[in-house]
Image (cartoon, rainbow, N blue to C red; front, top):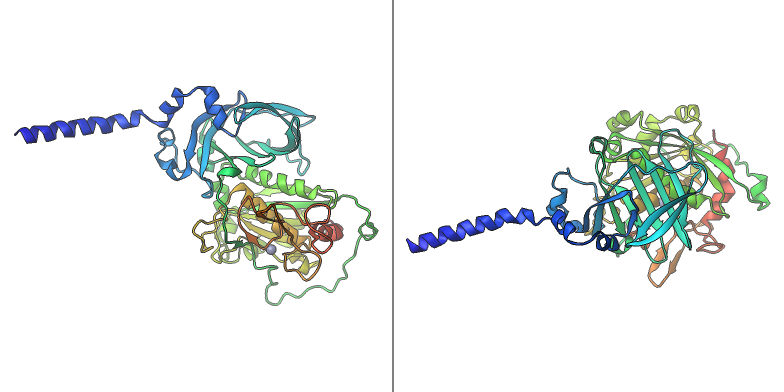
Length: 450
Ligand SMILES: [Zn+2]
């Protein structure tokens, strides 16, 4: 009897103990440390506009974070080890002139200086801004506001800080303050082995032959006189990416902010003009039988040359929401098919590549990975190529001492190894590793496609 009683008492204590566990949750923990201490641990907040929901989260344990229990599964790239979860008020910026935004970086007050970027002029309330931290001339800030979410990218001396929304479209639309993650590049996994971005240039479909129309070269580029070429681009998506993202136009904007920044270089000088973020054919695209095997062909099937022309687009990129089955994430027929219509199209996968055979799927649909893939495939359209190209349009590697690769490198290893730069003698590269030169030489041909 006594033993039985003891067991009952122990059981009762155990149950009481279990009942108490949920009370000591992450939200309670947060209240026990001061607001200042919380901010010191968080890479970036916008002062007066940021609410901290959960800080110092180990991403592998995120499902047991009590303050997140009320939310559906969050869309968090798997290479991020540690992150904070935050919400924003409706941040309003001026589209003309300079915005000076008080922020904190690990708790220290700083001023973010931002101006509206010029790669689009679409009246959808979603806009991108570029700039820097006041007093840090080497910093780079690329932010997108609007559509209920914030996308942020801040490059500092020895780390980058990224902010992305993590709820899906339906939950973002329902939420008063959708959830975002903020994380440092110091808390992101890189890989020893590469995941191939693509198989080089995509072969033309059977039966398609190249036009023999001669390639006109612009006299300005032949004389090495630099000036801007404006290239109009249509950005399309399918149902999967449209549904998964908090706001796919905001995500597309944030990718384009880096594309535009890279092409704005003195030795490239291409200005992009986004003619539309086109989700109007998302269902046709998703229903195309080639969508998970040859999404580039599905894209070309659904977005004909006539459709691009009627939308005023020189080129088009498809931000794909499906993981294709062959372990690559991008495709373009490339400048090799110029001036045929196929030279206009590129496809980039926006979601994790699960067919890479690596222990951690390194291409994880993070902002860095998506930008790398889009900049890489657009590079092919402009005659940029991989490290093993037979011409001077080759990617470049250098050592810091860890390896760094320019954006046309054929393998993706992660955010601290693959950069978004094109090779060139003025940046990283030399006269035989000069993808910027290749782009500059053909940019007027691409700009005059319409
Ligand atoms: Zn490639």
